[in-house]
Amino acid sequence: MPENCIFCKIVKGEIPSQKVWEDENFLAFLDINPVQQGHVLLIPKAHSDYIFSMDDKQYAEILNRAKALSEPIRKATGAKRIGLGVEGLSVPHVHIHIIPVNNINDIDPCKGKKASQEELAKIADKIRKEIAAAKL
Ligand SMILES: [Zn+2]
Image (cartoon, rainbow, N blue to C red; front, side):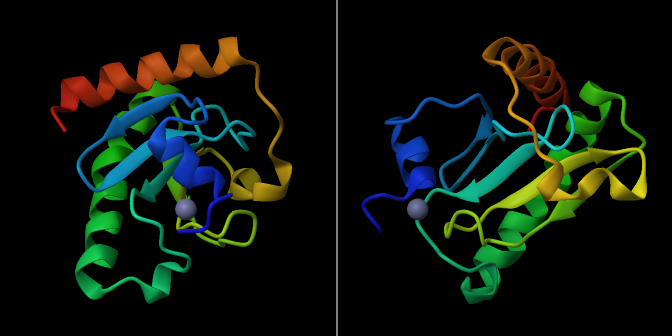
């Protein structure tokens, strides 16, 4: 794994993050520059640099995790739907953007704005509650 990978550092707890869910292989946490409130990043804990280089099993697993997380995130944010985005250009560690959307242009990652720790903590708490209620 690249030594300066920011997401590997988040996995190891070397960089703080608002985690909303994790299991043995995957971690979901809030994007610090959310495009919409409740914008979550879902990543594999093991460094992998391109989603389409993941083996079929891991690829299916990460998409299934995104599916499971979508409804609790939608409920916590009150959004119409949840959109997914994958580009991998900003950080070369596989991540799926899970973004609450109400309009078609709500998913543009270039529109991300830095959120305060307070805002992030508040929405993370709501999402964690919905995830706990959904028993993921
Ligand atoms: Zn990494």
